[in-house]
Length: 228
Image 1 (tube, rainbow, N blue to C red):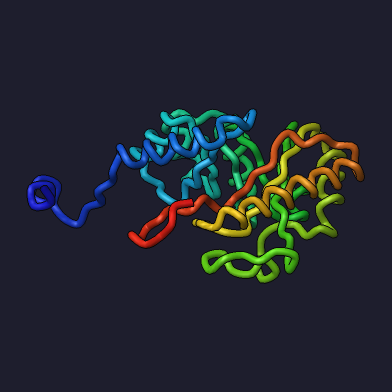
Image 2 (cartoon, one colour):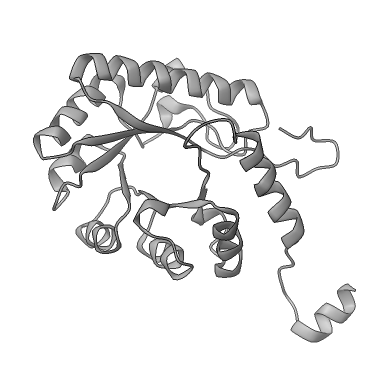
């Protein structure tokens, strides 16, 4: 069929398997159906295609956005404030304004951003960088060399600063690996975040509403890859 498709659409073109995308997404939802409140947030940067985002929203996914164009794309397919986690780097005033205008979960990756948020939302999330305590993978690299995220020494102060500015609800995020096919690595990340959330709660008295394992479940791109 490829010659007919090329004659009709011209070249170059991208060809996506909608049935395969829906099946993979539904498998993910089914795998975590026993976890109350579980939800996948798809990283828009991975495929900023409105047609694909509409399919993923139909499956029930939320969206992880890192820029104003990604916020626009997510909202164009119907995403509301509860459907978007906004994780940006070196966030500008314009990005904070765009995030606030349509609403989202704000995920800060630097302690200095706490004072720069124009209006602290009721719910705030921070990105944690475990440094040398954990190893990444070939895509992400070594956590201690990453520019993004708060260290263990910073993170309690960050939540307290957010509390002082009016935050009352809290989340915790990390991104150690990407396209990971080793389930053990992801399980270790979940254990790490749960333990960290418990520790922060004891120090500050706050209660976490969610933890977010960023980075992405791996896809077996090659025939000899073992599915996650």
